[in-house]
Image 1 (cartoon, helix red, strand yellow):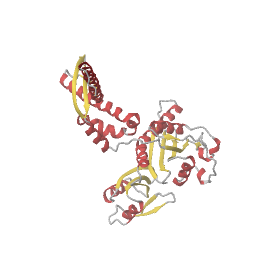
Image 2 (image 1 turned 30 degrees about the horizontal axis):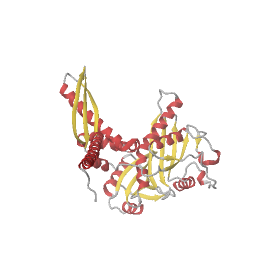
Image 3 (image 1 turned 90 degrees about the vertical axis):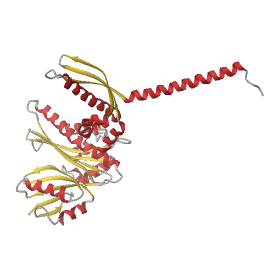
Image 4 (image 1 turned 180 degrees about the horizontal axis):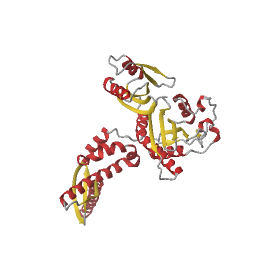
Length: 393
């Protein structure tokens, strides 16, 4: 057995020490880097009013905290997450910035005339932030983007101005302005619009599937033919050259059920060129609907079973608007499981609306028809398309 000489032993110990020191330094550097990445540097600004510098400083700090929270959310959620969760973020998360900031340090401040600027370094309390994001029902797309097919007609001011591609799918007609807006807006929100121009299935289509007004069942058949997971069908109507009206229904192709229904009117700006004004209004109306529609679509496709039933209903025979407000209050107050009642259309003495109900449709109908104290006497019926009609006696 050979023994190490003193010099060799010292060299080995020295080498081990150097390696350990390098590893420790690297670990400390990584820890420091992670800490730096969690810190956010922002500049808050405000205007000095009536010489009140203290109030201006306070306002600048408040703005800095909000900007810091916005920067953290952008880093945490990415562009798609910010877009899909925007309403919840601006209403329930960003305004409560002080609760979500763990600590902050003022690094510098400067007064420039009536402007006051302050440089702040802050750190977000991630546990509190996750609770807030969970409370708004954070929407994130897991896996590949959801494949979506649009069956949306464009109807002009005259009878001849009607465009809908599914009456002749082999013709490969170009995309209408409405379709272009739909593709752009929904793609921006992380969904995958199917191009009908690049993929025309070789199938036989029934006359019902080529009708302008599609039933939900026929729209779902189109979705299956094109390999879509979600179908959005509806219309974009230009009303008397004054207003654009967009109405869309989102359907789960696999289950054949309604995910979400919504509508949005938009005035055509008079000060713009006519055609440019229409395009702008279409884009704006589609964007407004998409903001509300995309989160339920993502939730529905992620949930193994959709708990909410979304029931299309129409109240007919109204003598005044109070009939609808009374019925809406009755559903919300008296029918357990009703989550929301949202008006979608007014036509003459009838109002259409969408009810979100936690349970199945038959249970809902039983509760409504057998209730001891309805707001008024009415008869309920159901159309072939599944819409529930309430006719006031």
